[in-house]
Length: 92
Image (cartoon, rainbow, N blue to C red; front, side, top):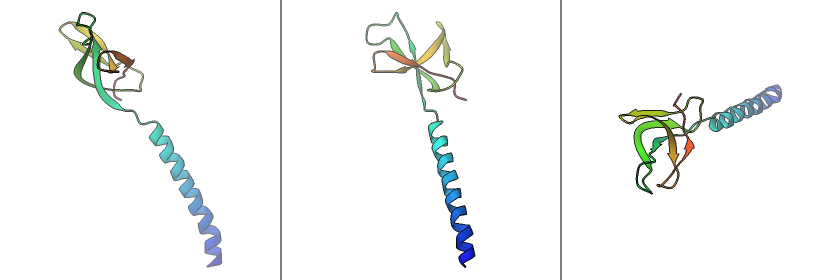
């Protein structure tokens, strides 16, 4: 029984540490998914950030775009209801 404790306790501590490290890394790399907004300079003041039906991510490599009859638009995050802010990216 003493030999089992000498071996099992360090192994259990090692496995818990590895699991905690993995969980922390996985949590930090999770991207947030959100609605994309396009900027319309011709819209009235306070309504220039227009909601689209496309969902995007706050992290990534490829810029999130939306195409409609007026063309292709880079999508951003809605900051305060009146302006588009941070660039959004395609969901991987």
